[in-house]
Length: 374
Image 1 (tube, rainbow, N blue to C red):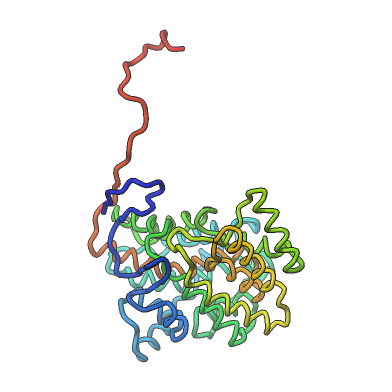
Image 2: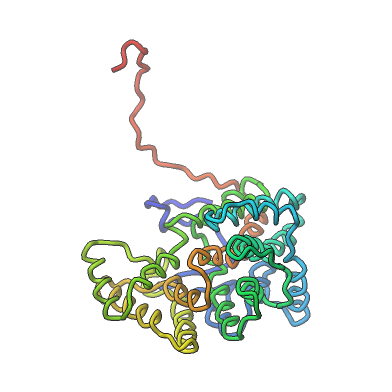
């Protein structure tokens, strides 16, 4: 798994092959296993997309019904894990909570033989929302919530645990859309970390823990949180326009714009933007959406930078009552499908991933005895 180009940060270097995802073709575009993201968002549920990524094909009705039942059965958390979540400080970063939760689960339910990998993938897909929201509700409400809701969907289950009630169909559909959009994105930093760890023949849980650690970094994850912090600063589109122009003049970084792979637009942005507008209109409060549009216009007019999927996702989540600090952990709850599929793909034709490096240090030097050193 090597490329010949030598570019900073491995940009443009081909580091392997995958059947899972194609991104950025002709500057735009996104496909999961050959299916266009537009078709998936408009026709599929997140569970269908998870099945597609993890099992290689779209499920028929019987397969989907069985899969949904399987995921529902795997939502429960061991008592030891719940106790650990209660002990984690309330001011911990929720990404650290997920990282620790996966690690503990890996101790309580070790993978064992790699033939169990599909079970582990389904278990993590079901358990991650439970881990996150059990900790969140315990430390914000003092409640030990039931993590085995009757909702058939991951999106409905998540919102039910978060809010303590059945979500509206609009909220469920919009949240489902964001999960589909976040599910997979080729060899990004966290996915590549997953494959590097997998390449050593380490266990499934270790690879996912490594992926969470990579996503925790501000250069990879957290753009939607930073975008929301920016949007919340302004009380009108006009104020946003002036404020962002001033930020650009001061050469401050504006999160949620541009992308390492796409060159002209992020194909996911239009889909989540339309959902943000619908949600704003339903709530009778379009301030966040109007401010977001104003910022988007400034960034394009001044810098020719387009909004990526994170930018309008920020106000979308906020309008659903989701706290900012849960935005990136939601990404984990979706992307675990892509990470898991990459683990399986790496294992199917495994080679240790060990790239070379250009040495830029000094040439060979003679040894200096202690009493002759400066």
